[in-house]
Amino acid sequence: MYAQVHNQKTVDFIKEKDKETQYTVSNCAGAQLVGASGTEDGRKIVTYIGGGKQLQKDYPNLKVQDDSLVTFVEDGKYSSSNGNLTSYISALHLLEKMTSAEHRKFIESYLYLDRLQQ
Image (tube, rainbow, N blue to C red; front, top):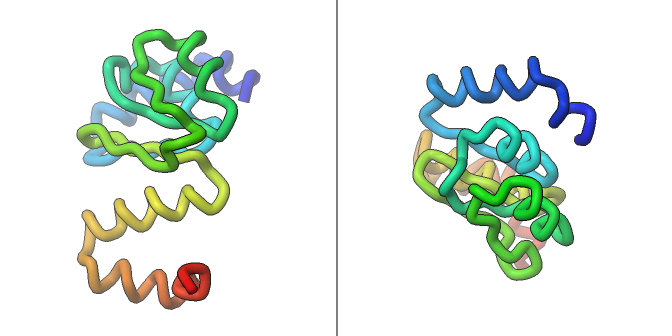
């Protein structure tokens, strides 16, 4: 992620697109890009497990949540997650907001996520 955080074209792209989006989502180390863009300054965010302290140090204007306790955060139009399997939480939450609870349940069943809840 270091190279992308220092790629001004990527950071500028995020800044510009954020002006147009209804929802903005980051997963895992994507929180570093959000931090570099400044689009979520003053907002709650979470990153990959073990990355929160560095994220807070690098971007003190973010309200970094405890990544060992929090897997998913939503703050206004912004949401973030730890990554890996927990990125499904934010993706499915957004899907439900954009469609319906029924559609979310259908997608969860299609992905066999119900097997993980047994």
